[in-house]
Structures are given as C-alpha cells and as structure tokens.
Image 1: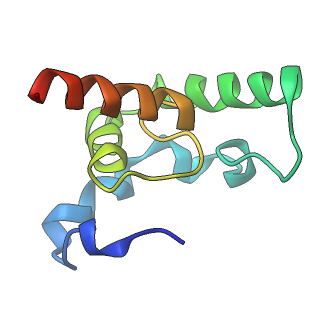
Image 2 (image 1 turned 60 degrees about the horizontal axis):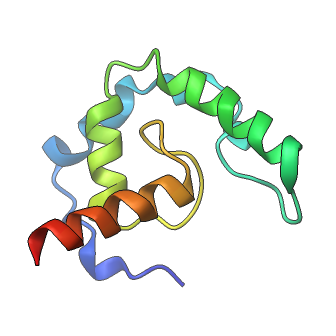
Image 3 (image 1 turned 90 degrees about the horizontal axis):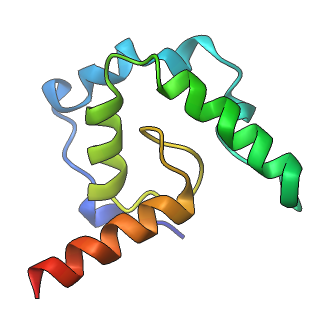
Amino acid sequence: MTEISRLPGPVMDLWEWQYEGKCREADPTLFFHPEGERGSARRRRAEAAKAVCGTCPVIDACREHSLAVREPYGVWGGLSEEERTAVLQKRLRKAS
C-alpha cells in the first residue's frame, strides 16, 4: 500500500498543475501497465506514455510530485517506475 503521509495537503495551489496535464486527454491505461505485462509490450506502452509526457507543459511539476511522494506505479513526468527509483537512489547518494 502507498504511504500517504508524504502527500501534500489538500491545497489547491499544490494540485492545480494537474488540470494542465496532457495525460488528461489520453487513455489512462497508457500510463499504467496491466498485470502481467512484460517485455516489448511494456516498453512500447511506456514509450507511448512518455511521448505524451514529452508534449506536456507540466512535465516538471508532475515529475517532482511523483518523486516527492515516491509514486510506485505508472509513468509520471516522463519517468517509468524504474527510472524514478534510479533518480531517487542517485539523489540519496548525493545527499550522503
């Protein structure tokens, strides 16, 4: 289960960026893999999601949000689950 204590409070200014996300115009299943999806099918779906992110005016806010709350699933801010984990690990190494 996701740890929600890291989520920011319900302040509209903190969440308003989501209204501008290009993902709102796309099929949500593009951003989250179905159970059991592996290999080339998963890579193709993730690359298609990242292409949507690449045209998004709020990609930076989305990416930072997903890293701040350690979003465990899906493509957020142009990063896959594995890519977010790598970014967080790199940040931890720099901090120590």
